[in-house]
Image (cartoon, rainbow, N blue to C red; front, side, top):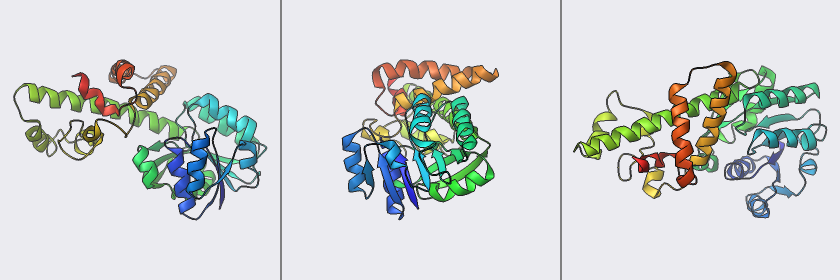
Length: 288
């Protein structure tokens, strides 16, 4: 399948490489020359114009920083430039309203389109083990699924347009709350005189069991290997967690949802990002 991939950043670069590895013909576009060179080294054909990259393709995948850029790229470089029969997949994490708006524009122009944000960090993007939460029609999902399977371990149809973004921001709000709670419990146990390793052994096998503790332990040398064991480098950056929490809080306000803990988590990550924005979000434990 011939696929255009727009946005070759920390996540997109690995995703495009996995599409090429799976045998797809990938037309890659990014504003960064370094990203284009990496894509070329990974078997992609590179372009310096997004409109040219989408010409003649069967699918378009985008992985972009925010809703404004997503809207601009689809309006100016994809809709009307890609063949009418192409399936469009936006894997960016953006606000629900913009996701619905862009999909509506694409559908009005005759395209099948999904919003398909991801769960999993840079390592998962590079390893092809992302989880995709997909919003769109059954037809669009079926067409997109074959593309997404080359980049992930799980592809889940969440519902109609925008449902993927809804699942993503709610999931990451929960993750932020869970990580803060996990970090607080570990540090409190330590200050009360309990060996953190012993606390991990007990809580990871009892009612304190959770992903943040068992699969992403935030204290170096405790539990499984995680970014904490690499000075909190790599993984999922605090700045990106903050972006998702801001999206979640905006969405909560739009629908009058009560998110007391979500709001507190956003407040904590706002402060954390001032000093540790480039470090993994589990670095919140450094403030306790």
